[in-house]
Image (cartoon, rainbow over all chains, first blue to last red; front, side):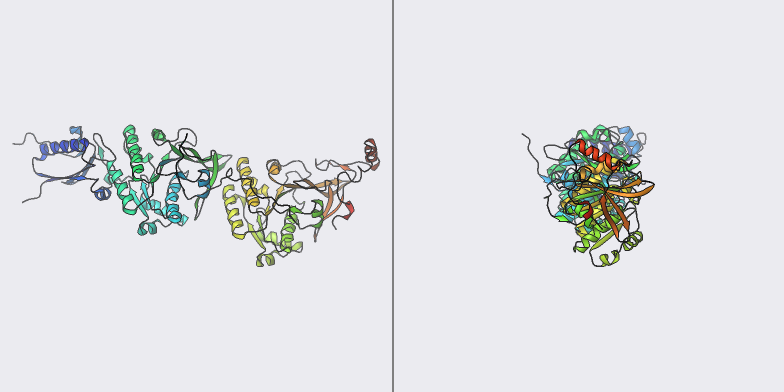
Length: 97
Length: 518
């Protein structure tokens, strides 16, 4: 088994509509760029404030693209998909056969 | 009816006095001020004093400086944050800007992560106090001011739920005007403290004002403060001083027998005497006699000299037969010399109070106030005098202040005009020019609560000190600086006009003029 090409962390605070919206938007973005060749870890900062501390995160939702390098960080619910994909450096590959 | 909230002491005595006990408990208080006004220091002191005096751990949320910057910046104050951190009484939440961790904003967000981190820190050390410094930096990073405001409001609400008492600092552009940028005051406006560092007549003047405490008592107005090594903010709460000093009728010697007689038996124990005169009239000598007079009665004295160096002072005293070095060695005297220009008047006052509280003298002399007046605005100067005289009275000391008049031959001085009402006794020293000769005259202008000699006495100064002689007769206009001789027969005529043949001799005087002095 090989490591997935893409790895993301999504920090949310609690089970809120905003958290769900961010997760849905992020998955849609990733899948259109990387199909299922990715790993997404969702972290609730209410349960793991220590991880938010480690990453010095202020605002949620917060996405970190950990792989491939360079890492990218985006804050917000990603509702503007086009801007989000640019910010995360995710190239759409709709035409790949 | 207003419900009065419980207060949490900040731990800064003067400020707690103004705040009627402290900041509202379990609430957030906004600390607003321009850059360099002392906001971060107040925030750090709130936590430090909490740890030191009240055993209350604290969390410092920093948006602007890094924790390292803050640790380093307060080292000069002898606050060892690293020690507190390893004791588990201080914890940083580092929300400072880090270029490498900058994130692009896409869509809506909240500060849930920050709140979670603060709560985590608060729970982990059992914190009672939280500071957020400074929230302006958050607005700089997240452009949607409206959203940031809402989120900060949520954090304030969250802090309240946690049961902590917090300070939030916010930057303002000017010392007067909008409380904070970005309309921050609108949401934490219940409790506001304003720090100012305003330029006043070429002098920086730091003040603190409690603008409002919703539903809680406090004093209004601006009060000066200074920043002291080892102490941090020291607030001089002038209006907080109450005139409740018990007043005594016991007298202390002025150190000069003739002067004691003129004053009706010496100065009052808890009074403040102002001596005003031109340069060379003998003010420093009178101060020296005042100190020596105390030492002769086994009383401790302290002198703050702002015009002469220690050596000069000791040499002068030796010239009049007093051994200051010996008195110091015996613990009866402390000499504190300082250049007025080395610090602000507020700093001087704080240091003087520290010296007084340390030495606990019976007598205090300041030579001269005029030197201090040079370095401050009139308002600062007046506040200084009020602060000093009330401290003198509070400690029931005898105070002796000198003031140098600008013109050689009399006339009012600015110093006198501003402080005469604050002193209990005023003694004037004047040059008197008569028949081509310079002589000197001394008058007790005012002596609160006591009869005194109202005549102007001639005095001389020699190697043994100041000697009072007979009162001037046949001379008018000495105080105005324009003495002129009045022939005896004219005085007799004036006396006969009023049917009082004693006018030329003893107007209101209470002692035989010839028995005074040496």
